[in-house]
Amino acid sequence: EYLEIEDDWENLYGIPYRVSRETYLQSFQYKIINRFFPCNYALSKWYKDHSPQCNHCNNTDHLEHYFYNCDHVKPFFCSLERWWLSTLEVSIKLNEKYVLLGIPNPNDDMFIDIFNLCILYAKWYIYQCKLSNQKLFIIDYIKLVKEKLTIEKARCKIKNSKDFENRWAILFHLL
Image 1 (cartoon, rainbow, N blue to C red):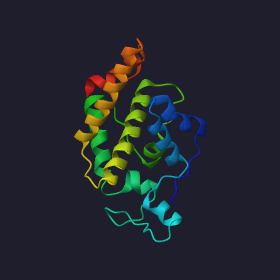
Image 2: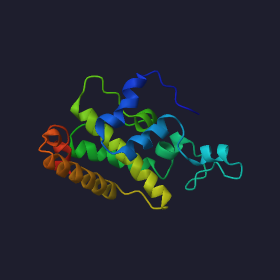
Image 3: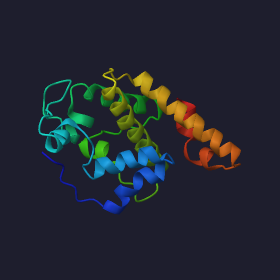
Image 4: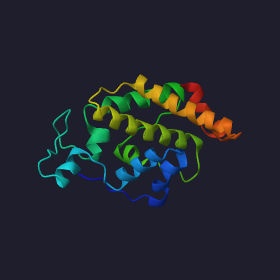
């Protein structure tokens, strides 16, 4: 079953460009939004000899399953929600829509941008783990985010930009 969305698509399409400079992440999210991501269900449509079943739980592996509903993934997002609550002291209840598309942010809320960056990195982390058949661990994900933000911090320092301090310092210092 596919998600029914009645949101501002311009805002949703812009989220990865707003929160990340990394073109691979922007392209990655573009594939998800346009349902051109190679989950097993899509691969089975493109290649008749490919199974649509999930490699981890044997359910149909469509996008919603791959990134959110899979028994292999669900505990990871529960851990991410708990981590946000304990570090940022903000409770966000994730759902399929927020995970796949991001959280709309028409009012330019800094915390929504932080959550959207975290969600984008979470999907990338899930993808990388599934490719290498590894388990998902919140600590490994946090290390990934810290590494990516360290690179962004260095880039901003080289360019003598305050962009990092204005946008990501809160998250960085909590990692």
